[in-house]
Image (cartoon, rainbow, N blue to C red; front, top):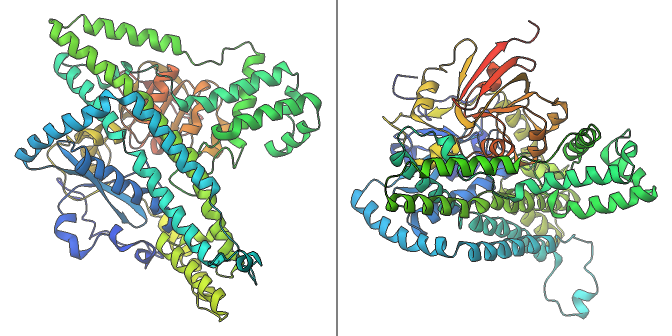
Length: 609
């Protein structure tokens, strides 16, 4: 790396053993000589917030969806003045992205007029449009639930003839796959319908405050919209209700019994009061357990509904806290009181009625959009994606039944276009009765790709590629990803952290000290002990219950409006986000201090002395 740029994407070598990785992905997601003039001229950063792992070929569909949806609302529909979409590429299995700015000043001005008009309609009708949005998303989810994935039988049912259906189960299988793919794209069309407008409202508040109150911290501004009642806390609240009910029914010993959650539930069904508790559990599960243990972007990030380990651990923890007389409720009253105190203090600093009115309007709009900004994620990446990944697994079952794959999970080593080809060839062979190539071709390809994916996992992705601009000003990049000029310069130097001091973004105020617990996946959440400091690459919404146990949070990735920062503020916990390398520098058991006021994390004592 030079002083002013990262390696070119065209200079990065393929890891040993991963030769041929490019063929796993669609051509339009690869860096290419055809588009080198553009691709070599901009800064790309690795999207560790949404896509921190090597991508299975099929899983690219999630960011293919947001590539179109985010871009269209910015560039073609609402005409966000300074910003088009976000372009994306894959290099050695990792997703890299770059924001696309509007560079013509005159066009920025014209877009501003359009934006005020079009965005204004949504802002003025936000609540009713949000209710309509929920209905649309629930409709997409219902369509997915009802989608049948037909089996291919040796002979069709008699009803195909007697009812004059006029189409086969083979055709309906291909149609079902097309509908499943369309369903995902529709969900993401809705995902971004209001999202960037919500962030624009946040941005307006931030810009007003920065101008009106020189030196104000981003974290202080973020606190002005804290205390919103959002759906992301509902799954955690349901776990708390179940903990209280277990105590009320006097079945806590059964709930804490030996075995997996599923085994314990079966034993509870045989107990009179246990059966009542299980009924309450079943009622809570739909939809609140459709909660991904990751970000929802990878097929292997299973949800609570698939794997009860995470919610069960939280349940047992809440029972123990209640038995010890502890309060397990979020400190919402304290968060709201702090918010109102801040609002009053800063409002009183303004000198004119005009400024106070503008401040009130900006705060009011930011608080209006806050629920959508968080709630949309539950509907799409959690509830919808959980159902969708499992629906796709049914197509994997059909390919196994047809001898095309050995295991339903092997489907994810094919990209979405290739799955369509494999299904077509299987149906064609079923229709003609002749042997077809798919029964040999795809098993061989999957075996090769398993080897390639493992080789790619051993590669450490570069944080960025290409030339570094003098200043990074794109607001969404800064606000969500925490990608700032200082952060990129730190990457260029290989990390500026020295000794025991780590710099990050102040995410939530306060100072806490405690032993570190470094986690990389939800499967490790049960290891967290009360009062520990959570250190992780990034948090997922389903990790919510752990925030009632920890003393503070530290993440490698994220900005002031990232999930870790927002949830920490709602729980009244100090947080430092966007550190870049905390999980590499801190070890479990280290004694650390987290200063959410300054964004500093200090290692006070190494584990073991």
